[in-house]
Length: 152
Image 1 (tube, rainbow, N blue to C red):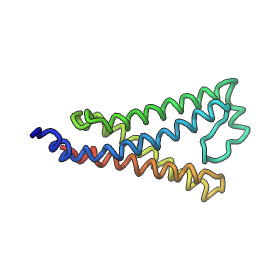
Image 2: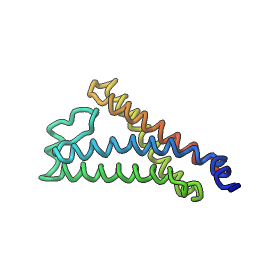
Image 3: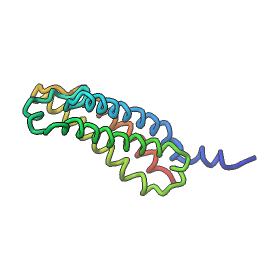
Image 4: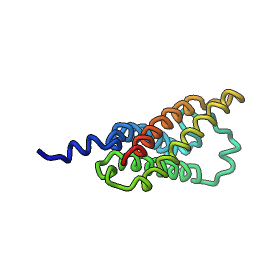
């Protein structure tokens, strides 16, 4: 009988896989939103507050789309980070490689949730839907972070 499957199942970091798959999938929604906005040459994000004309005036020709493509690229890096955390190789990798970037995503999503919802509550600017999206993103990221941290 091969002991490897039993060891892998006993490793607490193997519990990160469902969290990581969910976080990667959820992050992919952000990428799709940014690609859509880049193709349309629009600022903002799906479910975010309306972006005023002054914000567009601050950008030169093609800069809005370029900024949104860059945001989509950053989102794709996050998708790949979570996808990597779901791989069996992640259980063998040192935790210090994955914990800081996953922690950074969890922090970024938490701040996004607080800022978007808080801004909407206090100013009525909109953005609560994206804030709630960020809240789910923060929970999923924290799930990955905690399960990876519990390993070894």
